[in-house]
Image 1 (cartoon, rainbow, N blue to C red):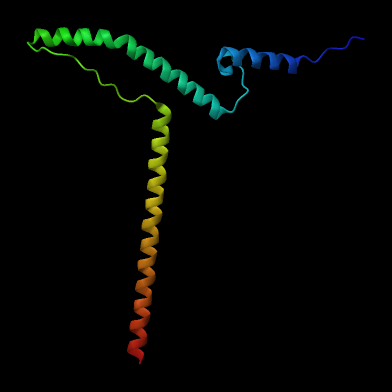
Image 2 (image 1 turned 30 degrees about the vertical axis):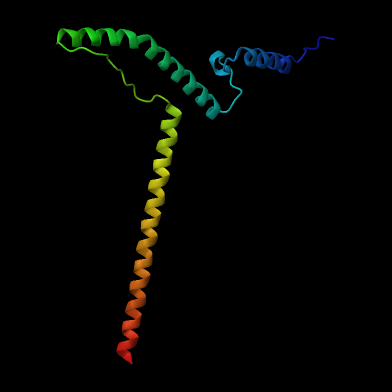
Length: 133
């Protein structure tokens, strides 16, 4: 008669539906339903979006300050701000690609060295057989 209803599953399903409708990543509310890799991708996306927002916010101010500074020095013209790439996922993939390329190059060099050593041994054997004949 005093039975506790298991609400774990329905509550989780409700939370999942609410979060998906609002497009809020679960980790922002302390919930952990996805893999760490997926969670880190979401965190990187949020960080990238925030950095882009701050750039848009600061760019007019920086342009104004730089323009005023240049005008006091006698320069005229437009100020252009060139930002570095902030897509952290691309940077991560690029570094992985460089790492894999370096590994492949090391293996190629190792194989080339082994081929040279084998060729040198064959040459030595041929020289020895020629001397014996």
